[in-house]
Amino acid sequence: MTTELLVLMFLKAQVAASGAILLTVALRLPVRRLFGAEIGYSLWLLVPVAGLASLFPSLPDFREGLQRSPTGLANALALIRAPAIEHAASAAVVWAAGALALGAVFLLGQWRFERSARAGQAGPAATGFWPRMIVPAEYATRFTLEERALIRAHERAHMDRRDPTSNLLIALLQTISWFNPLAHLAAKLARMDQELSVDAKVMALHPKGRRRYAETLLKAHARGLNSPLACGLALGGRHPLEVRLAMLGMRKISVRRDGFGVVLIGALAMSIVLALWVLAPALIAYAPL
Image 1 (cartoon, rainbow, N blue to C red):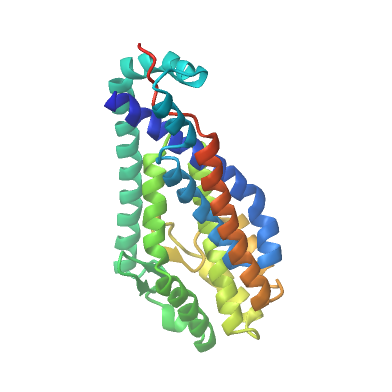
Image 2: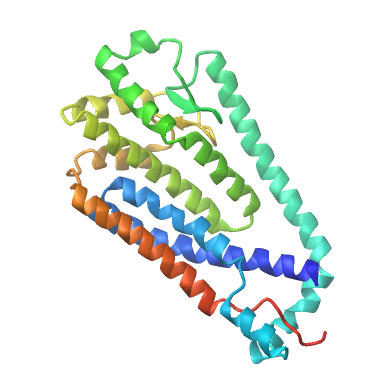
């Protein structure tokens, strides 16, 4: 029973998180336009909320427990209990192998990035569990004084919000969910929205520096090594950079509209929790195998 419940709970969390990912993907662009890049990035909080909420007993669980008799839903679950138990060990081995392989890829990528940073060939970026800023060897000569001020503002925003730690959690969730393509899509889009939200913060501090900031992004993008954890000024491919440059012209969001955005995130989170509590299938099944 314990093995079966663990397997079902894990799959239930994956389904709940996947639903939240699809909802976030659908909402991120309109929410960003209406409430700004910061609220758009905050939407990704719905994914861990859904995953964690799914682990708690749902209303059907309580009904099963009170009735102490199998319902139609419990009987339906009973049909997959035997296969789940029979293949649980094999599935665990495959899952662990995949998780270890992806974890090794992330560690290798971060090690290469750190090695390049020590050689002065990476950055500007913020990295580390205790975030620090790294810059390339030619930082002082390559970037002007104004550009360096914008770079510091960008990386300071990442460090103040502890975004490298957030990226570590994103990589961990990717590793756990390595078999779920939606998890990798979510990681890519969340990192993109993270950069957009920081760009918006920098532009709020330097409203007259949009052109210079765009030029700095282009200059930094000329050479940059990808890292699974670091928050680089211009890491990523061509398409994300085009999106960031286009977003620099977005109008400033009012405090009132920002407040509405926060309320929206809270309402969506509560709706997800309530929906999971009411609609999620019971994991307690009393039908004999």
